[in-house]
Image (cartoon, rainbow, N blue to C red; front, side, top):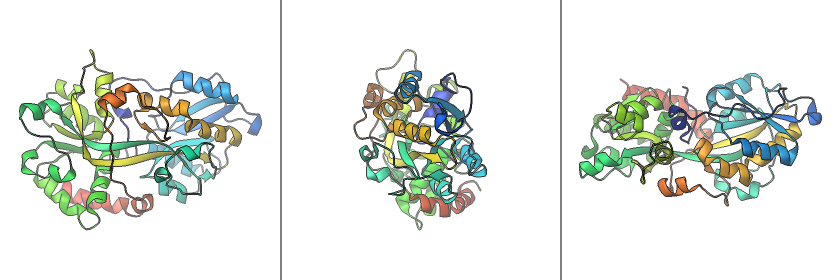
Length: 362
């Protein structure tokens, strides 16, 4: 898995065997011939998912059938669109996040489009300003999760912040993913860059390494094999009660447990979070430009926005979308996540990962 995506716990759903939607509708053709086409093709990462009823509602409202073309993780999908610039494989690309945004924009793969309903989205997540090359669709947070039972049994308060993680009380308790091969691993690194700045993040990681942080290749290994709080970790007799995962992981632990517990077995250290935002854009050279515009409008409409949390385990971007009870009861609100400007990520990501690797993996 490359250093791409996502601020949400879709990977957890996949690990628990939840299927995702490959396509909707009976039109097996591509985008067709301009405005006459009744198929609009959405190119996305493998974690895209939406309910049949919601995509059917889009067809009923617009006359267009959605064809979903899944293309690996977000980085791999974006690479393919850059290689086919001007002759895209679809009409809309969904899934580029703020860690990859500048790369997509610098390569000019999108046609500007100001989506209907954009006013319902807070300006803070409109990272392309008034150029409208991309439209924000969802947000999610990469955060340290903790095993509630472990800390209750030890009569030890779980960590709340990045600073807490380097305290002796939490020595040898944290597992994280490789920032060079994992999206949450990269997000956690970026969170420390946001927290401590260019002059402080390396010093922080030296302290974290001295405090026994364990690094594994990817999220699935970290969460389902090393983390004692997850269903998979319990089966594997894991011994690390802290893991870098997602703020939406606790609700997912409840959703797919049998029977469902009254309380999530895991919690979130809200002072350790990095905010990811995912965007959609109209692909330059799209064969069905009008259908693509209609689809982008729909992606930020209330039907789709309220459908996302239990399908992709991410948060809506529009202000009036309601979260399902599962999220409000078992999830957390991250009021002050760390962020890093997309252009800064683009300029320094490779050097940050290289420096991180020399500090942590040596």
